[in-house]
Image (tube, rainbow over all chains, first blue to last red; front, top):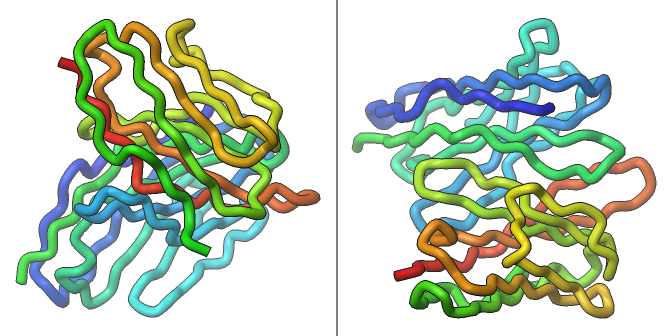
Length: 115
Length: 116
């Protein structure tokens, strides 16, 4: 069975600080995909990134970066120079590669950026 | 392309009533998923379609729940004899499955169901 753990329930940081959201996953699949989604107060889930299990290169997109470490089954997400608009609930998710591809989500981390 | 749409956005009903939700996926997407999200939790998978075929149902989907996707376009999710425990946000997502590529799922705004 697949499982995603986001141990940080809530995080608050002051604007312009850097913040890292942790994600640890469990799967028996050798090929799988990892995702991060953002859920702002409006409620709609917004896709941020997809990473397959064969690609362990870190990725940077503007102020966002992701650190995938297969050895520790972690896929952490860092926001640099945080802004108030980053306030949201962030979900890490896992799916298989060749089956139904359903997403298994963590419980989310509520991030609050204090102006 | 306006993305995934869901209707209604909010539904309040009394226990025991039937409700039906609609999801319109992104037009070229062949996969459609239904998830349920309760307060403080991540979305949980309910069922999915590849074109018009319903290929998997979660054990969360009791006999009171039924989903359809006629002609592989929009989908409906019906809950019969609603219970207070059915109160949740019902999310629809769609994706394009082609070859060996696992593409991201795009989510709609959800239907928030409140059962009184």
